[in-house]
Image (cartoon, rainbow, N blue to C red; front, side):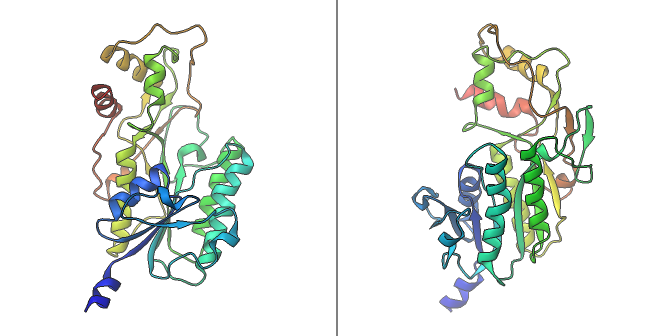
Length: 288
């Protein structure tokens, strides 16, 4: 009886169990046997079984991956923010992991991606079917990683996150408060998702996969209100005392100007805890 019960518990590997991966693993551990893979396995959340390996060094994976996996969540962060760093994280590391998995069947492989695969800069609305032609080499490596996942032998789903923010990612809020952000009026559109909603998105989609509910091959995960950067900054300035902008304050974003459409995700029944920037930043300001 004990063996049967043990085998009925899904096995989930979070490959890249860092900030986002760790948050995902922390939720999933309540209903699954969760393995967290990272270079330092001692840093995985309590209750998650750590696996020490470096996905960019395939020899470190030998004999490390469990055999009872139902799903894999690939959530790697580049060790360097250049083209080689992105290729290692999103393409080479994924290929090495797929090789190490061998013929082990999965119900789903999730690849954590980014809306940087879009190059639109004309305020257009983008969704999962919009053209992807990244202007930057780093974006092209992320897109290559998506294709690696989708072309694998496993049923795969890509999750494209817009800018993740939250209590552990408070740089933007601090820049506004300290006067280091001063965008022009009619600034480009910005898109974001609270870190709690980002983790919950992956958990939600993984639960769907484990229950046998059909999934699309791609979901765009962003909150419900794209907003121009100057609108966000002005709102923050009205909520909390901020320093006057410094002479060389940053004036714009770094990701073009597009509006991310999350309708496909919402149609799965997912509900945002922080549906817009006001909800997320209001809580962060209150907790400062």
